[in-house]
Length: 172
Image 1 (spheres, rainbow, N blue to C red):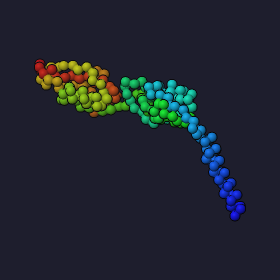
Image 2 (image 1 turned 60 degrees about the vertical axis):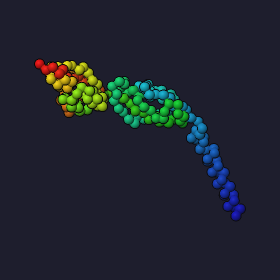
Image 3 (image 1 turned 30 degrees about the vertical axis):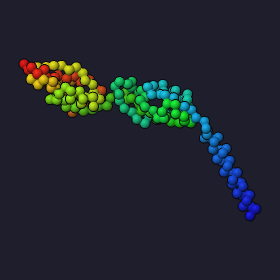
Image 4 (image 1 turned 120 degrees about the horizontal axis):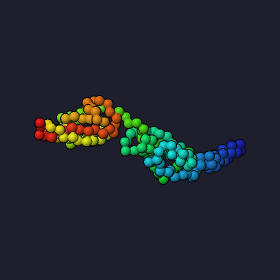
């Protein structure tokens, strides 16, 4: 019975020591650093900056936005100013260097207004709208990318500028 009491006391001391002294000292309990804002930074700059802060990063997503620079950081998690332990990974999404290819939508025979909405939904930009003699007023007659007529379904780069030839309603 005396040996059991001694064993229980030793186990108790070990458990208390483990949870109240060993774990807090090895897990940096209570020590945290604020997450810096890295959205908008370029990946190489953010990499060096995070290294100085004793933080790591992991690219978990990439997308393409023609209005942003290649390799610009678009999102981060955890958010800026969140408190984390040193060595924590910051998950980021990065703007791709090259745009993905998409299929050209069919704009021909539709209205200019409809074409503008379709182009926006495909992340394409409306370029020059040129009126040409045709009885169909404001109807899209031809679609161009980089000065070349493009058929519906043809592969083009996301973010491309699409020029349109539109009927003037007068004909020849």
